[in-house]
Image (cartoon, rainbow, N blue to C red; front, side):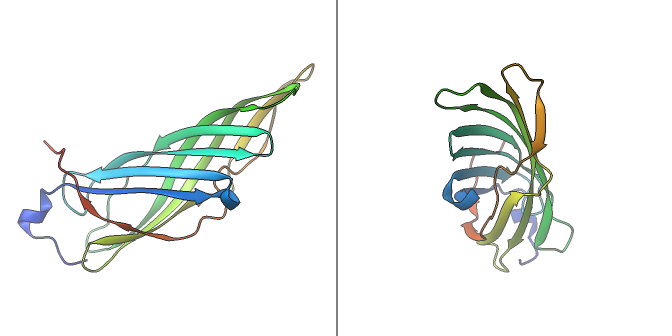
Length: 160
């Protein structure tokens, strides 16, 4: 990415994308913006909806970052929390889902696009309770197998 000029420092930028995850069973939607130029801070949210077997899971979390000085690459975690339901006649209920998503973002040298990878870290859990049993928490991934995608960096006009 070219070094931002003083004029670019105050500009607003937007990264927004929708991407299939979890072998096509899930959809990840994310939107983050900066009103302080390329370095950020970038602030936004993401959400995931997953329909797998008879489970429907949905939730969201904050999605933000600041680019290190002189760098075009940033990585970090975005915490996901959500809930869900089991369809059909089930004696079990989904009480909660927690899954930190890992992201890696590389901005192109001209700053017009960004390569994004975002998916489960492997540290997620789901808590289920079935009739006549206490709640059980087991490992779970809400957004596995993310493929990289190239996202346009768009102007963000809603800055103060």
